[in-house]
Image 1 (spheres, rainbow, N blue to C red):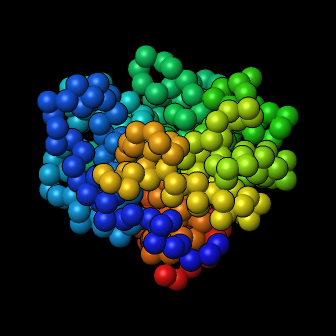
Image 2 (image 1 turned 90 degrees about the vertical axis):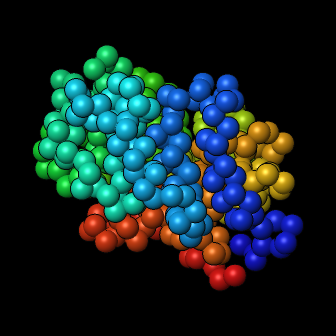
Length: 330
């Protein structure tokens, strides 16, 4: 990749400002319509700031207080918003936020571990909550959270791995459940979970690497499955799996970086799913995350297995054998 020109560089100050302003317009209908994503959104924003080297841009105490206000005392885990039922998705986000803010001591870890383990089904897959919806996303959330909490040894690893293996398709990819078509996001959660469990041996690396590389379109962007449009978020879902497999060079990094940068809002900050669309914090994180894996200059290293700052994961002794592109100098 070449050094970015002023017209194609990451607009870090604008993105930091955009994230800082999120949630300030509480009279907007969109704020209330996204309540079910609130804790996830805080994780997305904080992680993006960490990668850009600006973790200090949001108030730490205020963030921790909000995370703890999402605690579901009856369940022993986190909901997406105060007074929401506990679910694996916001529970993982809550754990990640507290670790990044060095505040995990605020959590009743044994209760969270019991909540997570209670959601594993006889087949080995995890439900997201007490209502029983299953998805390999929830399996990843459970595996990642247990690992971050230091209780991975409590997991029935054999059942977990066996279920993931049954979700593998002829093209090397993975689906949301047994028999579901391969999808880049589901590939990440399955490959990520297997990396944490040290069971990458069940993956057909060359075939999956080929399938992931085929996700790149002529404009440089990546899609989630064949015949679909490009989307910035797949810059992470695809690259994370490729980095775990050691195959990031299999895609055109220059073209992908240019696509991500073209989706920035040069006036208000933030990154959209594709150029010309409205920005959001979800795509802002995964655009920046993709650039980090591509070795974009000035960014912090991202651990693609946990989607958290690499230095933090390494300090906890959890780093796996992934390989991103070398960080270039400004």
